[in-house]
Length: 444
Image (cartoon, rainbow, N blue to C red; front, top):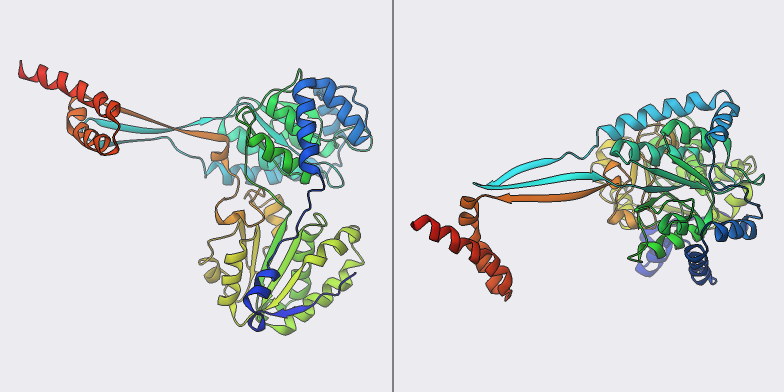
């Protein structure tokens, strides 16, 4: 590693040093924004032909057909390792179970006699799912996106994923898509896939909302199309993956230093800009974890990525667990692991985190794959204002109201007064004109 892992003591740092310690890795633009704008423009004007040309240029892969046929999907599903499909089914049943319990429910309430208000949840359609391929085909992300979309009732679920070195989508991704009920699958990745789903092409439907993680180019494209009224909404702001672990001396028992080391490495291996943090009141634990990381690093097939991402790792010695929690709340991690003697008590106080993993036997990997919760989470501090992906993200909330004559008579005067105060005369008269007819009729 270019930089050895070091332990910092929080209480001896000044506020500026503390602030600097919690900064995420910065991702320089290097002209990316302008390049993504150009890609989006090409796709909007050139459609399928532009997508094919960009795929050849950027992925070095010729495109025979953007759309994946049912025959290809069936063949891919049959070709995966015999352990894979049962694992997909096993994870899928828990993801369905958890998300089914979190379904938004239509509600009707009488807010006053004669005044009925409703909220209804309508599924979005079409919705677009982006599934990264690259060095790690994320079949789990297919389940995390497609299963809630189907539970929400989305009539058309579209998926894009980039070609591998052979110009194909990984068989495991296609198998997961088949299981989850994805309606259409297209072999296209990067910013061009986001543009295609946002604006449509001859083959790819224009989608109302786009979901899924991706690299910096995909993230930039999602941001750009979401800011265009003619584009598409997106699930949430996104940045590199991150994990923060809070641990005490209790975590040292039963090979605990290795547990924590793997927890930190499991997020750091996502990419060179990922970040891992350990907050602990125990110096022996911190020292043991850092030593374990150094020894485990050599075993990892993603060692080169880890060497880069660990440059941004932070190991912080705190006065106590309450201070650790305060630091975590300020950082607002995507993943928060609490590995302490009484983890649930600490977890009760957490407000700012994408997903919380409680206790020594709950690795973050369970949430990534098969516990049932969703692994599409806010990163880069967005956990202060955004939550984990759920079924409601695939629906839009619509309100309705209905007033009877007597209901309008009851609450109309309030509307008249408030409209008058705001100086909006037409608002007031929309009520007054009706009330005058009601009152005139009542006098007959």
